[in-house]
Length: 294
Image 1 (tube, rainbow, N blue to C red):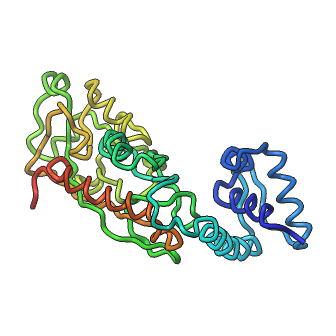
Image 2: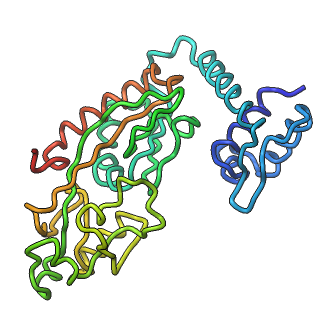
C-alpha cells in the first residue's frame, strides 16, 4: 500500500523534475524524497520516472498516476480549506515573464500586501515559465494561450515593443533611417537557440537575416547591455526608461500576455483576489504597456 504523503512527494518530483528542487519545496532532504519515490514504485510495481542527467521525467505509468494524483491533491486542498474558501489569505505563487514581473508586477506588490495583509505572494519572474497545469504555480502570465486540460486561459493585456538605444550609442553611430540600415549597427537580442517562445523571435519580424552582436537569454540583461551603449535592441516599451526609441514609425511590435489558472484553484478567494488585482494593475499601467495605441 501507499499513502498520501508518498503521493505528495511524487507530485513534487513530477513538477520540478528534480529531487533537490522537490525536497526544497517540501522542506525535507533529497534522500527522503528519493526513498519515498522508491517506496511508491515498489508498492505500485511500476517505474514512474526515467532518470537522466537532465532530471526526472515521467514514464507513461507515471503520467497516468500524476493525473490521478493532481485530482487527489485538489480534493485534499478542498478539505483543508473547508470554510475558508472565501477568506483572502494564504500563499499565491505567480509565474510571469521576467521583464513584466520585475518592472510592472514587483513594484506594485507591497501595495497589494497593504490591502490584503493575510496574503503571502511568491513571484517567479524569470526567462521561461512555470506550469499552471502541473500546479507549480497558482497563476501564470504567459506569452501564448496553448489550450491545456484543467487550465483556464484568458487574455490579460496587449503590450508594445520597439527598438531602443542609449543616447551614448546614438552619438557615436550614424542614425538608422530604415530597417535596412540596422545591418550597419550593433544589435542586442536573444540567443537564438535559447528563445523559449516563438513570440520572442523579434528580429526576424523586423528584418529577415538580422543578427545580434550581443545576446542574452535574459531581457533584463539585454536592457543593461543597451543602456551601456552596446547597441540597438528590441524591448517592451514599459522597460525603456530613459532610452531613445529608434525607427518608431517603422518598428512597432505588439504582443499579448495571457492569464492562466488551474481550474482546481480558480475559485479560491486568494487566487480570485490576485487575478482581479492583476487586471486592475494592467489597466493602471496601460500608458506604459501601450504608449502608442493603434
